[in-house]
Image (cartoon, rainbow, N blue to C red; front, side, top):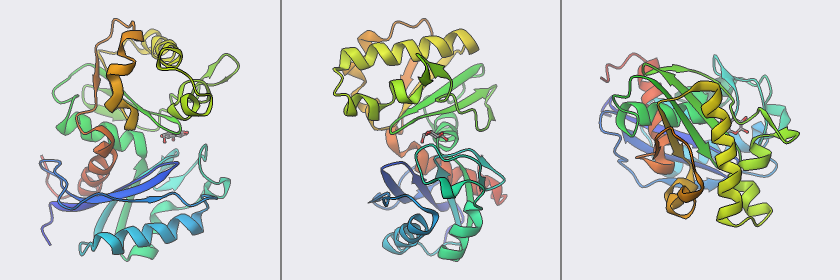
Amino acid sequence: MNEKHILGIDIGGTGMKGAIIDIETGELLTARLKIPTPQPPTPQAMSKVFGQLINGIGYKGDIIGCGFPAIVKNGVAQSAANIHKDWIHQDIQKLFSEVSNCQVHALNDADAAGMAEMKLGSGKGVEGTVIMITIGTGLGSALFSKGQLLPNTELGHFKMHGQIAEHYAANSVRKRLELSWEEWGNRFNEYLTHLQFLFSPDLFILGGGVCKKIELYEQYLTLETPIKKATHQNNAGIIGSAIYAAEKSWVKTF
Ligand code: BGC
């Protein structure tokens, strides 16, 4: 197995997906396999699906990167906004390493997506402050200064109108409340405007499935900060996870 071909897994509130990645180019070397996140999303049920992904992809390497939708410190989950509360304080790396017989390196899912975009996508070469927001079941965030990640920022969790921001402006809210693109676009604009005020970023990168449809809501985004969609769209999490695993296991990548 080529040491630069690493399996990246991206775990979200609705789907668990993975592919083998060429960590130098970001290319997907296998078709992306996606399995719905089991309900309820408990550690046991999700570990089982993790194993199914490895088998389904037919991965023969021994290192896996895993983006996980929670605060992740030293491979341990510290929060559980859109997954089962039993995840809190669970050692993600240990659980998934056991089920896959591989060395698993876990990080926050949005941090993973941000890493891919900074190394191989829309943030490449941007020296200032970059904020990536992944728009999905929740709102994930990755904050970079001079290319350096400040992990676990959780910028989807400050309060807006008495509720956490992701309960006001995530894509799941648009779907659940059947908001028009204008209604949702205005909410999302309000969210980004607040981030702009707090961090004065040089660039916003938008990720998650809904970034593909940016032409439906970009007219409602009135920010001064430039906005780009993620080059790797919703594969950014898979790609960044693989890059992270490579860096963690000291494979020289860049
Ligand atoms: C979680 C974050 C995660 C984001 C996107 C939020 O609910 O708190 O950790 O990055 O969803 O999945």
